[in-house]
Image (cartoon, helix red, strand yellow):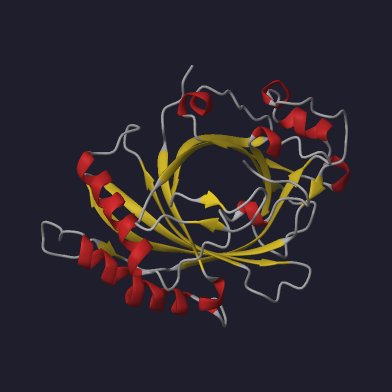
Length: 297
């Protein structure tokens, strides 16, 4: 059975060196009012009441610990799967439930939307999302940098993700436990899932999210803006990754033409109007955080 689209998320990597200093809501709102709101007002029509389509501001800051996992032979990433662990706060102890997300992401909508990916942990949640980013081409095989087109662009990939809560002690970080949590996974992989092999982790990441600002796109659809920042361990001293994204939750799995057009125009506009902030050093956040030797197609 095909799953219907739940949301669309537009993502743009930024140059982390542009965000030196402490990560705070004050700094995030300075970026919102000085950089993003002018793009909204310059490229999108006003609302019916004459107001800007940019509304609210960043009012929530979340700090989390994030890590990506794979088998020693990169079995997951070779099949376009990603496994992520996320703890709600750096002070969380290993005994507390960890949010585990298994995600299949690729360009073929029908493959992704008809994949069955149930979870058996606590509070399983499955979502089908369209991930939208600038079109890019790798400069060479396995290179981290990408070449962007001369004009603003988009490319879509489809992401099916299942999240579960799980007390993920170190002894449970094996392919055996992974197969128990996601019982259809082994049959979806292009290579056999090793029997009870240890999972290897990528770099430990301190993640900082800022949320609350929105763009009203019309017909009940809003683009919820998120600023995401990553610092890689072990020192966590350098700001390594920055991203601005906006997510549109669909209504009855649909989005009106007018709302979609505004979202597209805004996304194309920030690629040029924020050119001083945009980076093409990498293709995605995840590509920088996989275990050593693992890459995504």
